[in-house]
Length: 419
Image (cartoon, helix red, strand yellow):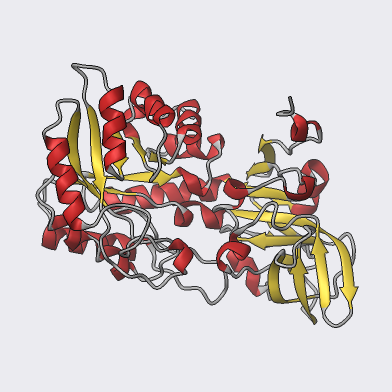
């Protein structure tokens, strides 16, 4: 009987007779030898399939709609390039994400730029690149854009609105409630809309809202449609993203079809059939396609059994930031019984550097490979150099072949900015 946690890895994951996990035809022990650990491993076919699933689910139901990938979830040029090749636009939040999107070959007209504190430099990059939509979050965005847009030119914008929708997710990833740092309440939004409509340098295309992240119930996401509709009839309504992803066996996020059906039902009720809809999936687009591979460095059996790996907070801040629960397996011993309860911890000098507590594993040994599924979202994004940690590579696997799309940092890289 296959190990139950294999179901959390990309579709098609198998286990060889000797108990080694195989992803896209690649044994994880071979990947560890070639690329070292820690490493973020992405099943490229799974990534592409998810992009196609989103695009088909939306455009087959509403042709005047489009999917824009929230790049912040996995802002690797190679990931952005996959999205571009699969007909997906890109949501960018900052100058670096714009520049990497352009390197990935995106049509700038398909870029949507976000940010609650955009700098003049970032807005200049956006205007000069021809970013299709800039989502203005405040009056200062408008001030800067009016200084940057050349006379005779026009920058298309959306206004970000606080939809006043509460969501059942962690407070750190709630964005639709009154008091959020993102967007404007209805009265302030109406005032900024009127100002933009009077500007010769800006073209108001519509409004945007985002309820939050890791939301399992699509009804909470669909609840943002009515507050947007109440602001007026516009050519474009950007409904944001936020659909939850599966991290554990118990997690049951809505399917893409269920999510799209909920949004479109609300759109049919409140919006014109001619309006263009945009959705911005991030976490749910990339999370399931990747896993992180570690090596066990120490096992300490004392008051509790601590299994320490060669990564941690340096490559996964999700646990420390909002208590995300993960699962893991000893990826070379999947034929053995999970007989021991352990705490999986990282190598960093913080008591909060805990990856999984608790977890059942076979009796772990130094040198074992530990694989953590569902790490495609926000791990590469927030990787850091704490304690002189070298950020891990990103490895694409497909049809039994593996290639690094981002190399591991070197020791020299740590000092590249010294002057």
